[in-house]
Image (cartoon, rainbow, N blue to C red):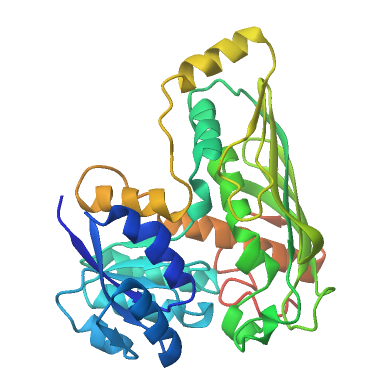
Length: 357
């Protein structure tokens, strides 16, 4: 397998990409360069991992033919322009969530991908871990049966010091609040397991912090498969919890409650009867451990680049998650249920920050 050279752009969450994503695959990836406007952070991360090449110039990395992958970990407000520029430069691209701040922006990226030499992999690292992957295997095997209902809870805590970082809490730079920055992971996990939504009613509010964007939200979904789903999010919970509970005809699944590793075991897998339990045991009886978060996502990305597997997360996956965000914002503004798909006729398509009249 060929070694891929990586440039990390943004050394905040970018450090986690190095620790969890690239170092466990040292035979597959080499972090050859890091880029950050904060020269102190640039020096600290460079020294910690022995990365000699350090720059404040994104353009310099794009012009370097020795760089295979640009890993974008910058504030959300610049993701769109950086992703398009990196694709235009012939690079493979990894981009943190949210991919961009509108469905129009996602569609611009998808248009750029059509003629690009490289590919884009958005980050949805919470899909990985033994718990969610066992549930996915059981559902895909047809054992779970008809989907009934689900609840998804993102109950986190963010205090004023979190928003002391200048780009956080602002529409122009963070692009949204709890729906975009925090709950997006669990909502992607829901759709990864239960499929897409068909109709959405939602409410958002800013109740916890003195910020521009929302920090509380709730939504009621009708899924394409007929299931009912409730979503609930806050950044004012005194106990941090990430929880999915999915009810199917033959199985109930409940995730661990760990806020930042909900994909890991132990998940509750509750079979309707002994016959279903035996079927589940047969399907997962040969289980091989799935490393959580970035470790598995980056490993699968390298397998894709080597022609040995599918792209683990696609731009279409990111669009589906952001379409749900768009629908919740639109519903909250209008007070009406929003049918999906959300297209260019939506008042939120070009920019979900625009107020619905």
